[in-house]
Amino acid sequence: MQNSVNLFKNQSVNFILTVTILQSKSRQRNLLLKMKTSTVRSFYVAVVIILTTGFSYGQQPALLLSDALSNGIANYQSIHAKRNYFNSSKELVQNARNEYLPNIIGGLQAAYGTANGQYGALGPGSVPGLSASGPFMATQNWNAAFGSQYVINANWEVFTFGRLKSRINFAQSQANTDSADLLQEQFIQSVKIADAYLDLLIAQRLINNAKANLERAAGVQTVVLAKAKSGLIAGVDSSIANAQVSNARIAVIDAVAREQERRNQLAQLMNDTPTAYVLDTSFFFKKIPAEFHTDTVPERNPQVQFYKARIEQSDKYAEWLKKSILPGLNLFSILQTRGSGFNSDYSPVYNGSYSKSILDGISPTRSNYVTGVSVAWNIVSIAKIKHQVAAQNFISKGYTDEYNLVATQLKSQLVLADERIENTMQRFREVPVQYKAASDAYVQKSVLYKNGLTDIVDLQQALFALSRAETDVSISYINVWQALLLKAAASGDFDLFVRQVR
Image (cartoon, rainbow, N blue to C red; front, side):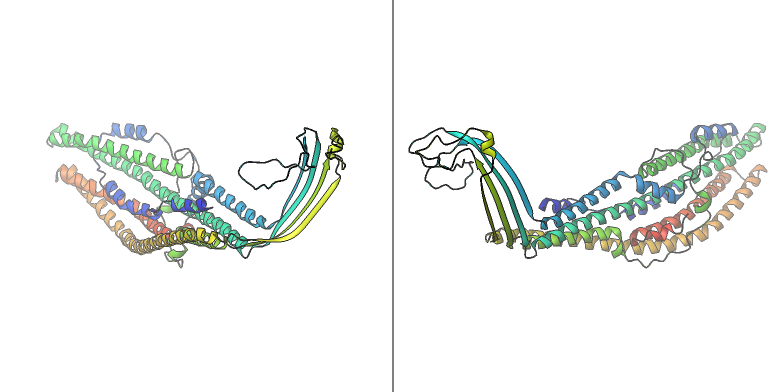
């Protein structure tokens, strides 16, 4: 029983909260913003898009976030494992309750042997002995016959001074811990799936942005080549454009590679085969959350509840250890019936009065019964148990420290989530202004370049600014949803996120 409790001590004390996964998104966005756009020949545009994409998003129904969550919760193996552990604990609770039932043992025995008796005292030891009842012969003889015994033994510990109840409470606390562990696993898995879903949305949108950049760059490339051939501009412009072709190809390939990686992560979390998922772009890139407030405090977070359940289980185990030294009041009753091939007048004088027939040996001839009450108490167990109780109390204190650590971390995460929501909303309001300015600047520089009023460097800068603005527009919506997901993960109110998506 001690081992079953100490299993929890071996769990990851350095528990990494799932919500910290969301904190790494800023580094990812900085990488995505560095995607460079450049010019490329029209011929390469179609070739690169076909070779790098390799799939079509329009051939299957959209995978809604709600479907991804339900699939992941239903299919993920670790959730199945936690559920089985919980079911096992529930069975152990019922097993502890059944300990109150009396022990009723029935047995029968048929044996063949001698019946030599002898005076003397015997004591129980580690070596099994043989018991025989019969007259005390002057010398050894080897007369043997069949004998039988039929026994019903009932023993019922009717009063345990709270010892049995404490064991039931401990078994129930273990079931509560496994239940909390299951809920925690489902909660963490839901947050991971939602985060992977949003990541895949961004990755797919950035592929579309890269394709749009290639199409724009193709138009610029056409103008550059035409002017270079006619001698209107220096040939170095062609070299600059050609140098950017490889960068453009790599940008598209990298975008597809990131999409494939995010797709694989989502498939793993749903225990599914990676495929070209069609996600709900019509919703997440057109709407933002309408509600950011929750009344749920971090103490109600499923992750915190799991640590709290561990403390309660450890306390219940310490209580059971204390109660285990108490005595028990037992009612007992034994009914015994025996048969023997030796006759009642078998003696040193009539030592031939026995039968070797098995029927004579198994026929019951004598019966006895006994019933009574007993109280047993191992007084020395007090000294044995007190150190176990002290050790378990230290384990409870350790669990309490871990509980406080997780609760503190989640409170900090909740503050960070509110700050991130505010920042992402400000960014969301700014990106349309940035995009319009970048789009107008690109159109202006494109016209000026075609008329020979600016150089290709200015045009490339405008093209890069437009590409970055498109990226900001794409991720600004998802940033808000991820900020809400962070708050839902920190507070434990995942419904705050789910009820606002379809």
